[in-house]
Amino acid sequence: MPHIVIEVSPSLLAAIDWAPELRALHIALADRGWAALADLKSRVTPIAFEFSGADRQAQQLVATLILTQPRPAQTSAGMAELVFEHLCRAVGARPDAGAWVQCCVFLREHPRSHYLKRQWNAPL
Image (cartoon, rainbow, N blue to C red; front, side, top):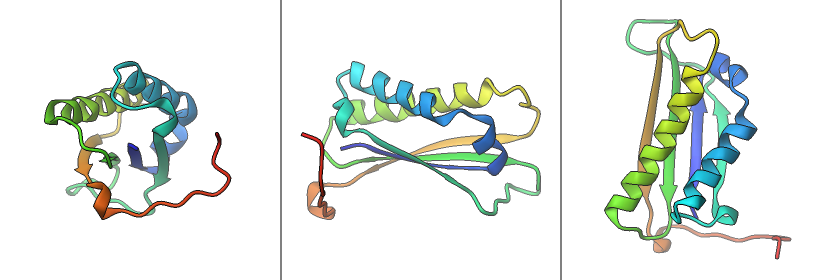
C-alpha cells in the first residue's frame, strides 16, 4: 500500500492543481504494475515555515514515498524516480517559475510488522 506524503511551500501549494497531478501519478504507477490503483494514497500538506540555505524566498516540495509491501530494489527505485519526475514536471509547468525551488523524494520502506492498520466502511 504505497503512500505519497508531499510537503509543499504555500505558493507552490496554490500554483499546482494537485488533484489531476496526483491522479496521473497514481495511474502511471499502476500502469507499470508497481501498485494497484485502489491501494495508492497521496496527501499534500503545506509547510508552515521553511528556510533553505540563506534564501528566505526559496520554495520546497518534499515527497516521501512510503512502501509497506516488499518490492525488488529496482522497483522501489523506479517508483521513487517516477514520483520525482511527476513532481518536477508539475513545478516546471508553473508560470511563475522564477523562484528557487527544491524538489526531493525520499524512499521509505516499512515491513508489514512495523505498522498497524484498521479501516471502517471501506469500499468493496
